[in-house]
Structure formats: C-alpha cells, structure tokens
Image 1 (tube, helix red, strand yellow):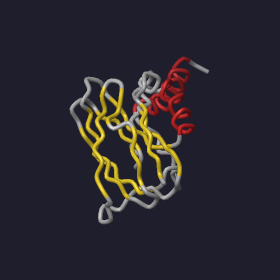
Image 2: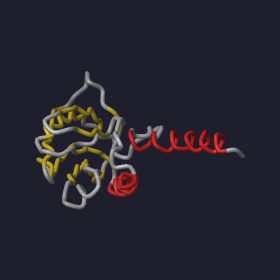
Image 3: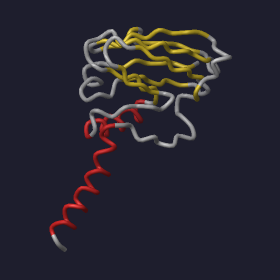
Length: 153
C-alpha cells in the first residue's frame, strides 16, 4: 500500500470518529424510562428549572402519573450545563460516554445542553410511576451535585 492510500484511509477513519464528539448520536429511542414527549396542547403546568454551578433549582419535583410538564430551563451559570431526564442508571451510563466526548450535544426530547444565559423548553408527559432524575452530564458536573429528582406518584 502506498503512502497516498494510507493517508486517504487515515483521513476517512478520522472523519468517522470525529463526528460523534461534536454532536449527540440519536439513540433511536422508541420509549423513554421517565415517560414520553408531551403534547403542547395538553399541558398540566410549567416548572422553571435554573441550572447553575453546580446545582438545579428546584432540585426536587413531584408530579402525578399522567401529568404533562413544560420544563422551562434557564442556564443562570457561567458554564455550559445540561438537563437530561432519565433513570439514575441511564444517566450514569451516559455520563461515562460524555467523559469520552465532553462536547456532545443532546437533541433528544428528554435532554438539552445550554450555554450561559440561554434557555430552552422540554415538554414531558410522565406516564410511569417512580423516581427519575435530571442531571448535568458534562464531565464532573454530576459528581459535584448537579442532580435533581422527579418523583412520579
């Protein structure tokens, strides 16, 4: 194999491996552990969540099973932060992936990454009872306490 062929192959492999570090790979979720994306015409209530170094306000939310919430997320901190709604086990697993790809962007209906002074909304219908969490999976943020809990009764 000549040097030109080796360089071409190396560039092709590099382009394939670099893409996941810049954007979030859609997982093809057919279902979500904490429920499902909400219907904007059937909202129950709005909950504002502030993302700051290194916490969420409020850090605990109670909802009724079947309730739809419009989360208004505001990054009031000086660093990028995330809100990812899932089970603790799912978030811990995803946090490991984030350590390998810290610039990963979330484009799933249950998660978003926000720059400082930015806001976003997530519409969510809680169809399953239990305790779920929202956390910031940017490396070390969750470890420093950026975890909130949603109890669905």
